[in-house]
Length: 87
Length: 548
Image 1 (cartoon, rainbow over the protein chains, first blue to last red):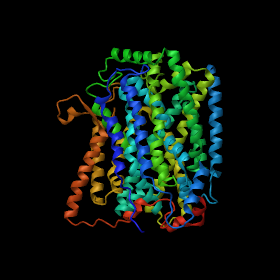
Image 2: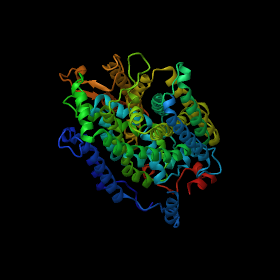
Image 3: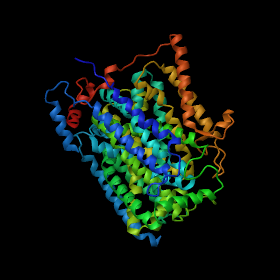
Image 4: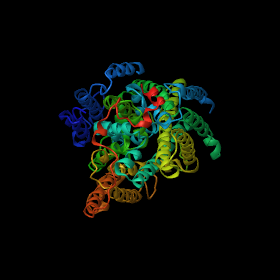
């Protein structure tokens, strides 16, 4: 191994946001303001889903590794194409 | 029954169509040789992003969820919405944990979480505890999938008077499920999950557009729910939380999130994916299901607004609140579409039930059969034992439903969540640290398990009049605090578990008790697809053929 691999990245700290925010009930435990008839309790929590998706997507994009290329030089292209074909 | 004939026909046709797919699945992406636990139990560890998304999604969001969460909303209001924060926090929480578990399992050929614990802590005893905990927690979960199908059948009027006649459709459905799981292994639920999710998405999109239109808009749906909870004598229901159940809401959401990926069947779905990026991408794509779940939960309020009265339960004077969603569909949709909706719930039960029985079978095969009964079992023997175990597990689940009150399996599932949490220190923390001593982990498991069961025993259920195992909300006043607040049992139990683990570890380390040999290396936790140091058994010609 030339360089030791690692999962460490400052971007990982971002994951705390969608873990902590949805658990703070005082933020959203209200009936008003309503949105399309939904009390705040419901539409705010549903919008936290977007927060979760956005945060994990950013962390994934910022920390993704290139495809496996440790031993065989042809590995990256081979694994890319097999991935495309199965999806 | 006659007025439901259209529904029954559509339900049956779709159900049989999907069962046919289950049998064909054995040939889907299959290697030459299925007689290997990696192939039968993990689909060859080759699933890419889309398949994994459907598989894990089909696994975590079960028919029971689709029936029980709205039922909870129908009965208790806002407290039932905990399912939404629960399924939001879970993905960031496990984002980094699961890739480590995947890497070390890929590198060493682990099939179950107990395999990992066995190698990490050099302790067959601890691995046995983890395996038994997993099997015990999974069984009632499978039984609950039957509760989901049964709610649909009951609504269609497919019931009889004797216990055998009442359960005959379920027995037939499960016999079919058992047969194709036996043949196709994890490939069957992976393939069926496409159909299941497509049906469920169609049904939910139609439901959230069409039903509010029929019921006078979202505003009036929430107002109807509010009016019902205002009028009810219970202090803890309502369309928002009150001062006393917020701590319960938070701890239940967080505790359930921790528990979900410790369940053996979720880990099976994760280990079946082909590389780390597939898992990471899924952690940001899976919340699409959380949106679905949130909208499904609101069907409970629509049922209130539509004036649904749940069907009677198994015992005199009780109601089966699980029937509210099927009844809502039955009353509001044209019968052909209700038939599709019922098929969606029914098929929705098959996918998780299949994965759960495979996960339980993997645990038995690897951590009990191979560890204690036949150490030199070949991969083909392992696959054979797992196939038979998966049948036994499903027969057990059917027996749960036939011989016990279904309410009892719901209680067991509640207990299941609390007990599976007790594997967190060994499985989840074990991925990060070897400091914990195997003796400490065993002691912590015993302490957490006893504490959790004792607390659950103390919780009465006001609605059903039962004195014990009535829920997961433990009154803090029983610890001597002067407050009406409640907290999730699993949260306290796992805290006690951890405390004992740390104390006993300190004692055993001070006494220089042997801690065994760690079979893993730091670099194992970072391995990815194509790692040159894969275990030799995984590089047989078949494994190579199926992994490329």
